[in-house]
Length: 87
Image 1: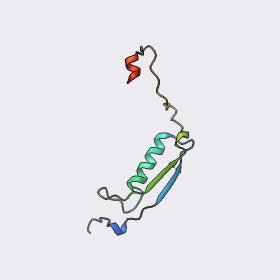
Image 2: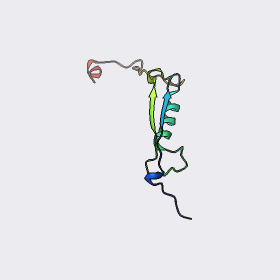
Image 3: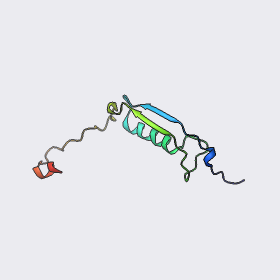
Image 4: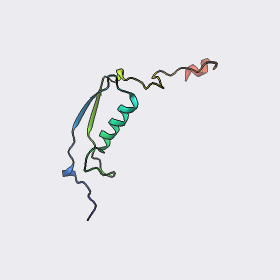
């Protein structure tokens, strides 16, 4: 039995629209990565681009995981200088 390698005629691309409202950031990122790479298809091959097109709507409403926050803050006890703020 020979190894299957998908040809251009075998690849069909679909559009996926994902609503990111109240979805945890890490789970959304891993799901989008699977769709972009094409790992959900039976004809997946790592050396061929078999991925689909993905549009994420309402990205500003993503909920962070319980352990993290989307806003980064300065740790307490760390002096903030003007040089650090300029970066």
